[in-house]
Structures are given as structure tokens and as C-alpha cells.
Amino acid sequence: MSTKVKKMLFILSKATIENVYAAFVMANGARMEGIESEIFFTFFGLEAIQKKKLEHLHVATVGNPAMHMPTMIGGLPGMEALATKMMKKEMEKLDMPDVGEFLEILSDSGCKLWACKLAVDMFHLKEKDLIDEIDGILTIGDFYSRADQEGCHIIFI
Image 1 (cartoon, rainbow, N blue to C red):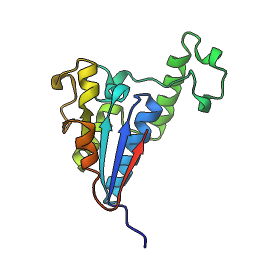
Image 2 (image 1 turned 30 degrees about the vertical axis):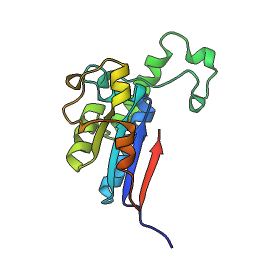
Image 3 (image 1 turned 180 degrees about the vertical axis):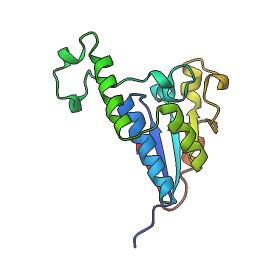
Image 4 (image 1 turned 120 degrees about the vertical axis):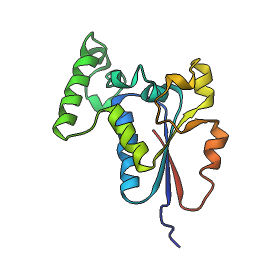
């Protein structure tokens, strides 16, 4: 017996541009298909919802096998900025919204945006440091309880 996907929960643990957009595109795609979606921002993923950091995210050039370059080259000064600039330019060609605008689109579509309580406490953040669209700060237990239904899937990014 197959079950229709009813809800997608994404856990975002890293705020590199490639991870943030992967989560945002999949969450948005779920909403466009009428599927509930939620994103749980934890550890460094919290940078994607911090007012001061969300527009300054970068591409990871070191230790990223998709970059197809040796780690030494990826670590050279300016490489991360160059890769980020190139990726943003390609995304603009596809009319992709920037991170802040994408968060607004997700929120307006009904996608729930949650901050991880442990990570918020660990990084000494306050709710005022986070975007206005955040739906709240949850423990991981609270987040898992939101998955307790048939047809729900969790993806860790």
C-alpha cells in the first residue's frame, strides 16, 4: 500500500548558499504541490534566519566535492567570494529570489519556519535576532512531534 506524501519536514544544519537554496526550493516545491512543509533551522543553519547574516551567506569551497577543485585551491583567499558571486549571478539569470525574499515567499505560502532552541541558546541568540517570519523556537522533541503522522517525511540538509 502506498501513502501519499502529506508533509515534508526539512532540517537545515548549514547555511551555505547551496544548502539553503536546496531546502528552500524543496520546501517551496512541496507547497506548490499542496504538501505541508516546514523547515527547522539548527546549528549553523540558523544563520539563514538571522537578520544580520541571511544576506551574507557563501558557497562552501573547502571540502565540497561538487566544486571539483582541490581543497588547497578552495581555501585560497577570495575563492569563496568568487564562487559565491558566480553562483548568485547564475541564480539571478533564473530569477531566483534572494534569501530574505525567499523566506517571505515560504512564510506567505504557509511553510512553517522554526528555530532550534538548543542552537539558539548555544549561540546566545534572542528571538529579536531572527527574521519576523519565524513561527517560533522549538526543541527537537517539539519538532519531531510535528512529524507524528502518516505520510510525513524528514530530510536532513
